[in-house]
Length: 538
Figure 1 (cartoon, rainbow, N blue to C red):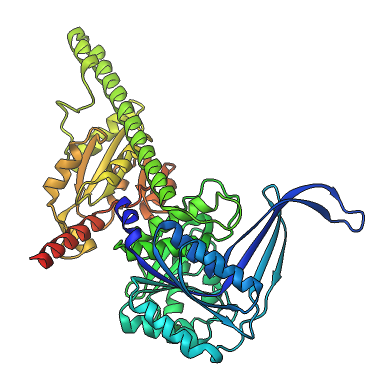
Figure 2: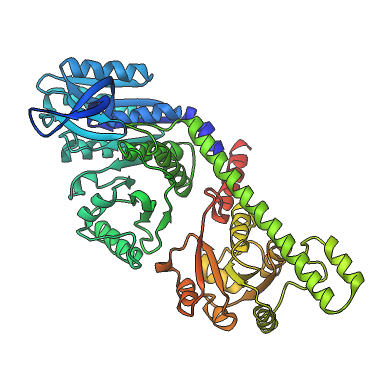
């Protein structure tokens, strides 16, 4: 993920859209006005920033991208101020001063960390005919040399069906991905877009659906809503931002299998501009060669940074690097803690067994033994495992369970095992057989056979027992073993039948935290890209 951030400086990003000026007045409130029951704001400082599509540009510049903006403002003092701000962030821009337009200004009054009032000065952008030919030529030139094109629609009159379709046609002509931050219920003007990125409210409006991310059936409802949009409009992908519930991506080719990632925000001061940050970072990551999943993870991380700031803000490349380092450090601490717990539990168990047998020598040896599972056979069939589980429960131990393909072992797997092991006294890992992986992943998977995959998992100190299963789900195995805890990454209870199964008989289902950027699919794609690059050099 850090590699993509390093490549941001080579990404040529073009932003097009509704431009405005954001003004912030910061102060304190000590009294109520004698003229009316309203607070009196004593202003301490003022600040002007690029707003609307301008905030997308500011975010691209903060990430280090080579940024171009094409847009329209009024021929007025505010328009000239916008031009100055664009120049300050070293954005190459083609700014057109419409003789009949007035630059949009949004003024916010803020006391401490609280918004008191926002005052909007705006009129819809008039017809672009007087400047259209010149504007279209500038847009064409910019898009031709771009790596990615971002369309930021604030519903201020710029994105009419004519202008939107003309810009998207240029993106298709030059083979550039077009990412749209939409407004309104009708997405027909976005036909042909590579990605449309609505927030939850916009997603509901466009699909005429009522969606509640906290509901157990949210995933099913969201899939139905996405399909409704795909049926109506020629859009390749939907990327829904769900506030504190993260992000969810749907593709036209496979809408039944969306990808959802959790939010990164720890403390929210202000959501102003978070959508712009998400749009800019997602586009920059795609331009740098990231997969859609990796771009989502970086965009989500950047959004988590800016909502912790006051006012319209952006996330810098350095802040993204620091956030990635913090996530890695937290995951490593979790692995260390879980490994230490494994050592303590295994040593205690060996001491207990030795004492019970009256073997003093064995008790001394047990104290020096590390949690390497030496002498214990960890690869078991289901009947053998059922007996082990029964014995563990008889001794009052908490049995944990997780399952997966584990095709190419990576840091994400270790992180999941560490978290799962911290929830129990003994962790069982069920590994999909080769046949079940093929049914689930396709004929080219698994990369490694079940014997190899199971042996690698069993070699880990974090894992106590391993079993291979051939069914499409782990439900029959869970029915046999009835673990106290089931743990898995990336599955909420509404789309996790094994989790609901364990909860139904009184156990716990734990959704593990993901270390973003790690997956077997990503590893395979990186290896493919590396091989392709080598072939091109030859």
